[in-house]
Image (cartoon, rainbow, N blue to C red):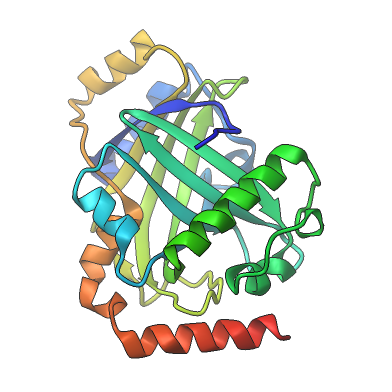
Length: 262
């Protein structure tokens, strides 16, 4: 798979919420708040993702099995505004390296693209070659897998970064999930299942060397690196059986076809 975004490394930690403030104080000496975070009183902005997978959950299984080369398909969005773009993303792992392709897509194009229509430049907010290639790759993977909408994952993210984004530290609070078989693009989180309980997901992302000050952060707070796969852990929390019902899958295809027809 070609990558149209700089490759990076990504480390994840599950931390108690009481560490958010001390970690914020630590990283603020080295990083600036993300522009989206800076606009929020609590420095956290909402993030929502619609995850796609095959009817037999091949992408889910690839992570559970620990495949060294794997990817996820998701549509990221930040609100319910019908004029806001959607971000079609392929997040791939090659050994320990993360590579993400992303295309900014008009929201109105979602039903037809998920229904199988080939993508065009008219689907894009910005008609760049790299974004068209990313969207074409996303649709090719979706078609090959027979991938359909599976879950909605939502949380509030506090983000800190260097001016060139070479280092990025995020804290994702109260990650929640629920089934979303018809691509409703919901933003409500009440009633959804907590994926990691009361724990916050701390992610450290960097494109080159692991900075010494980040090593000091990990040591100072005695952080333990581990897995925090929001989609996969969410499916486990909800129960795999909820996503393997043949009758529901047929209903999904019917609803998507109706939406694509207008």
